[in-house]
Length: 200
Image (cartoon, one colour):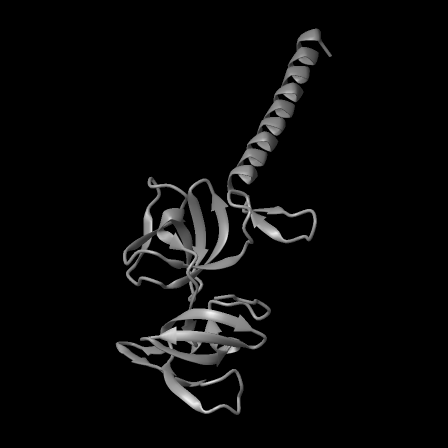
C-alpha cells in the first residue's frame, strides 16, 4: 500500500472521527437545550431547568388569548389558539422563557411563561364530553357540601366546567364556581394529581 493510500485512509478515518464527535457534541447541546428536567439530588423529584419547580405541574392560562406554538420561540408556527382564561394546563418542559404544556385533551405545545398563572383550576370530568359531529353531549357530576360521599348534594356540575381549586386533601378537593363552594372527588377532576395536596 502506498504512502498516499495510507495518508488518505488516515485522514478519512480522522474525518469520520471528527464527524462522530461533532454529532455527539451537537446531540449533547440539543439535549441540553430541550432537556426538560433536572433531577433534584435530595429527593429525586424532577424539576424544571429554568425555575426549579416540579415537572410536571399544573398551572392555568392567565390570558383569554394564548397562542400554542410548535417550538419554544415566536419564530415557530402557531398550532392552536386558546380562548379560555383560567384553563388548567400541565407544564411538562421548560426552555428559557418558554414552557411546554399539555392540555386535558393531550395536545402539547409551547407558550410564553408570562401567559401562565400559578392559580389552580381544574376541569370537571372532561372525559365525559362526547362529540358526535356538531352535537356535544355531556354528563353531570354531583358535588357535595362536605368532603364525604354521604354529604348532601351541593350542586350538579356539567362535565367540562372549569372550576377554581381552593384546597385538596386526601381524595377530595374544595372547589369554587360562580361564587359557590363545594367538594368533589379528585378522580372526577383534570388539573390535580391523585396524591397532591393543595393549600388555598
